[in-house]
Amino acid sequence: SKKIIIVGGVAGGSTAAARLRRLDEQAEIILLEKGPYISFANCGLPYYIGETIQDRNKLLVQTAEGMSARYNMQVRTSNEVTAIDRSAKSITVTNLETGETYQESYDELILSPGARPVVPPIQGIQEAEELFTLRSVPDTDRIKTYIDEQHPKHAVVVGGGFIGLEMAENLRERGLDVTIIEMSSQVMGPIDYEMASIIHQHLIDKGIQLILDDGVQAFEDHGRKVITGNGLEINTDMILLSIGVRPENELAKNAGLSIGERGGIQVNDQLQTNDPHIYAIGDAIEVKDYTNGQPTMVPLAWPANRQGRIVADAIYGRKAAYHGTLGTSIAKVFDYTVAATGNNEKTLTKLGVPYDVVHVHPASHAGYYPEAKSIALKLVFDKETGNIYGAQAVGMDGVDKRIDVIATAMKGGLTVMDLPDLELAYAPPYSSAKDPVNMAGYTATNMVEDMTQTVQWHEIDAIAKNGDTLVDVRNPHELEQGYIDGAINIPLDDLRDRLDELPANETIYVYCQAGLRGYIATRILDESGFHTINLDGGWNTYAAAY
Ligand code: FAD
Image 1 (tube, rainbow, N blue to C red):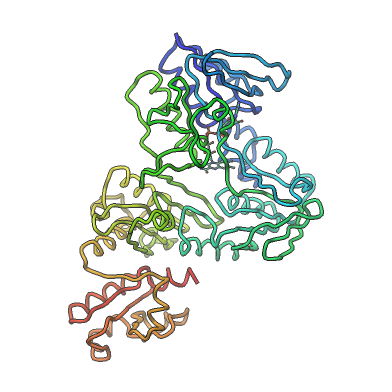
Image 2 (cartoon, rainbow, N blue to C red):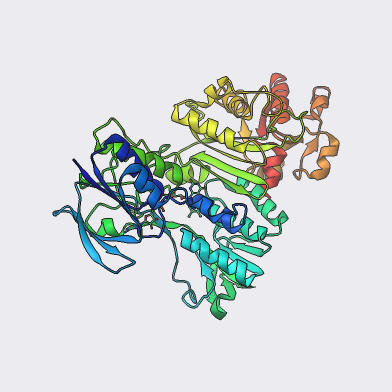
């Protein structure tokens, strides 16, 4: 029978171990974890600090004892693997409690060592006393104990990714004032700027001090003062560093396994490294971007869990392969949900891939049923083929299911023309008879079929300045919230009677609140012989970004 060793006992490692046992009662399975716990809920850690999750034990999804008992395997916590001898097929392990070092042989080795928070050599970082990163249960205990016992009043969160934003919310829950410092022009990398802008406003509304386009230059006064590149000085009681993670690749690197450009362990679709007896999964590996085929790193829990199962199947010769990662992700940011799947505009621009975009703002469920909330939903696709590159959504309700439906459509190879055809569950409390995903599909299909031409939110100001005709087809009272400089107002319902006010031989740009009335206006005008272009996403998308 096989002897299989797994390095790392949390998301990927535990999943692989359990599946291995279900496939083979005889195998000798050893799970080695350098930390004190296996199979803990990484994703729940911020919510324990914020006290939405109150019972610490709830974070410990499976214990070493529980796992050994159910799966008849050796689970050794506080055991760190420090070297791999590939020719001897053996590893060196240090028992961190006793200091003892020993060798363990293997037939197959699975690496699931995860990733670690990036801690750059910023001036004063060594002396910063209350500086934290969040990855493990001990990290969580440190942060929570500090808050419980020292009652800090202010925190600086460095980095506006999902861990940074989740922590900002949870620190706010605990009564702290929070400053977020983000180097780029937006939080939440997986979505594009105009979508993130909705979150920027919301963070400010929730009392967060949001600093964009600026980075930490130095920590002074033992971390009680943060100096930014733009010269801001922020006094604080604690710092959370959440600027991303790096794959734990030392073991693999030292063993001569091939490593990608950005540090991820390279594997084939069987999750096998360049050593056929060593496999690697989870945050530590480089994966293929499912949308564009390029190598990438996606440190999320779904890939780790999926790969955990596939690697066990692969070791036992079962038909299994990992086809790449879409990067479907979601986060709660106070009252909003932000979710995305596939590629965004930034990624496609970097790759030089041409794409088209639609923004729609449908209600999460029937508008006449209470509590309907508008969803900002964006599709990125190829107008020539209808191929879906990605989707992003921001809203207070129903965001999760729309992104999940589109992620499913993408894995199923559906195009934007298939989205109107998805027959989705509807009753007024849940959706509309045309679901937001259907609406996005109709809007994109109109572009594929050349029923409409659009401009984007970032293009319209230049067009208006240029003196082109821009018609705001909203009702006059809607203009009170603002309008685009240079626009003339002709409400949609008056348009047919006022055609003579429009120039016959120029392109006419139109916009409304969310894009739909603008589209109707383009149809009326085009049928009357005009050439029109609609502002995609309307005033909503435009205004969010400014
Ligand atoms: P891990 O689960 O991190 O497990 C790796 C383990 O290997 C670690 O416990 C480590 O101690 C151990 N190890 C490393 N080196 C050695 C060694 N040499 N010897 C022995 N043991 C070793 N993902 C989502 O999809 N959704 C979320 O909402 C989400 N929220 C998150 C919130 C937080 C605060 C964090 C930190 C992560 C979150 N993630 C989330 C990411 C998700 O937790 C990871 O993608 C997932 O845990 C990766 O699994 P893994 O097995 O690769 O690594």
